[in-house]
Length: 66
Length: 537
Ligand SMILES: Cc1cc2nc3c(=O)[nH]c(=O)nc-3n(C[C@H](O)[C@H](O)[C@H](O)COP(=O)(O)OP(=O)(O)OC[C@H]3O[C@@H](n4cnc5c(N)ncnc54)[C@H](O)[C@@H]3O)c2cc1C
Image (cartoon, rainbow over all chains, first blue to last red; front, top):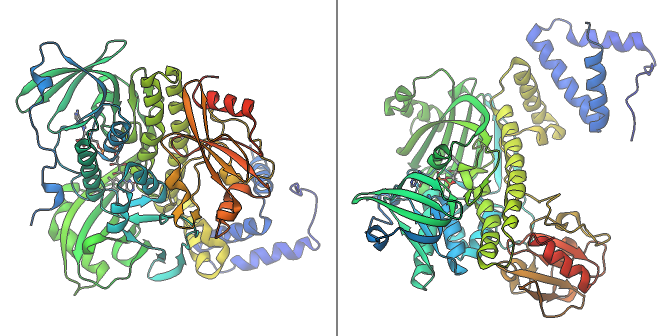
């Protein structure tokens, strides 16, 4: 079973980040929230392993500011 | 014409117990003639155990209430002797459509697995389900089985007397006292007996109201289940359309929390809503209208000494997933053989504690499933609505999202994993679906079905394996059912019971659940498994 990757894993990080922002360009807050939700679900299905997703949820929670 | 639910089916008649000098003592008294109480009474009586059913009413369920009865329930009613009637009357459906806003996002075909005598489920009004049980009770009574239905017998008080329970009962001709060796409380979600005994019933309340309308119409809607999320005719809420026998359609409309129930129930408010849904020119009559809220909760324990709770009195779920009556029937199925053995003295009283363990496991599974459906159908926060809508939008385009759409999950019987009655699995490469604790799946055997021959007693099912034809351990008789892959025209038996194993021996409980399985007959192991399955180890 794979572990969640928390080391740099993106080939061209700046481009990927820019793609994310571009996808939200011109959307209202509600449209952006909906897009994010669809994206999370698509990525979750692609990952396909509940344990990896649980690690990702933990990692996301752990990075919230105090 | 009167509806069946308006006719008294077991009207009050005076019982000699009302004139007894000292209170009469009965073996098993069942309070509540709903689906669960009736099933328990029939099952006990046909096996020779006296069962007296008390109900404060004398008719079947008012209005249809439950409409989806699952395969396992039909298999249980087959064992009771009235499954065929249910199936003959019921509506079988496989197609469903899901709508979101004003568009259809997808449709599905349930494609039920082949090789079962009974369909995955049927739609049937609860009043018919109860009517057929009442009829069956009358039949077994006529055959001499010790069963009695006492209408307009309202239980006012229960007192624990150690080795029995004393009941104070009100009737149209005054009160009387009755003693019960065993009391089964099947008195519904509002269980007066639970309150009289001061017992808890905790869980989660869902702040929502649903309007349920059964309408009679001559419309040529197909026999499909249609579910709407956020439809134009019920903005921000959900709706369901489902067919029942006799041209009756179930319509379920979510109304939200802050509503005036009496106002909403008025025909002048209901009819325009239904017209917006069905079309202006569709002709229909309202058969039954009700507004309900729901809860998901259960008692901490179902067994309290000689008082045992079953059905809605013990646990309550949201209607999504049709788990109320279906799980209640499984309670009765689980309880009756154990109670019979304890009464007959062939098993210790502690066997009944396994009813608690096994059915609490079942209730928790049902509560989990129906809570999740409810959270999907009626999102309670902005974020949960965003995710829900995202799933629906995705489901229109991508197949992967469709399994995430949750408008109620089909009720499946619970496998009693981890039950103290199970013997650890000893069949290498045996299929997971028939592991110890699991309910036996059906399989066609030429001109009959496997489940026809299982149940009511312990059975040793052998597949290409030798074993004695009858067998006794600690006063418990076990009969063998010998089968071979040569009797398996479709391959279903092999797939469901052998998997990768060349031969197998199964010990099957009277409720058709697997107690143990092995690759071959081993007398010592089988004896130990029987003792274990009857609470003697
Ligand atoms: C709108 C709706 C839709 C539903 N849909 C489904 C579905 O599709 N599938 C499904 O499986 N379930 C469904 N259910 C749930 C189902 O109706 C219940 O789970 C089922 O009726 C429970 O059966 P029961 O025998 O435990 O209790 P009940 O049917 O409630 O019977 C209890 C009986 O006890 C009697 N009683 C109460 N107090 C006393 C007293 N003091 N003395 C004597 N008698 C008393 C009552 O008169 C009643 O007859 C639905 C429920 C609702 C409300």
